[in-house]
Figure: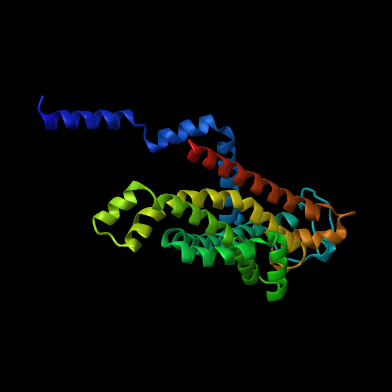
Length: 293
């Protein structure tokens, strides 16, 4: 057999012996049933967020004082609030608002923190030292305290809530990207890229960043439930989304004055927060296990 034919045969054999992405995913799901459960739960939550009209035809802001503070029943599955708004409709429509705030703020944190973390970890000691000290100052504050301070200064609104949550978690993504860039900068492929004349910028954004992105993605999934809880806490304190816009945290805050005789107002959005946090936690842990292998 000629050399090209042998090489072709070896390549085909190697390709045939390597399972496809779908096969690898199925095997991983079988090994990690909790990961599959997280995917199912979060998929359902995303479906609710994308198409709330499929789950309820009621308006989340319609007021019916004649139905105020009704307990859960056939007409109002989750009951009503003090002005007769349907809690099921508000919880369903609040899914989109809540997830948009959390996902959007974390995306900003990941982009900003990841960008500057990559530069600080790859550029050198002086840049790393200056940026590291600034990050250490922000990290010295507990996330919930920093979120309350920023939201209190800026005022309660969706935009200001996104800004507050973004600022709180920029340092976390900065550190993840920085440590990844430092680790990757000592790899052989970086030296090889320099030897063939690639610029530092091309190496950083063309090669190093690609290997650091999985770390940022896993951190995103791990932090998601924490940011969700802080967002709900800020809403509970009246520093988040303002009525009548439906939001899980805002509904919790709305129901705190009626918790003794109308607990359903806070109960059901609280359960949605719990399920969403559980789903993303299971997905994040599964991805982390996958990366550690």
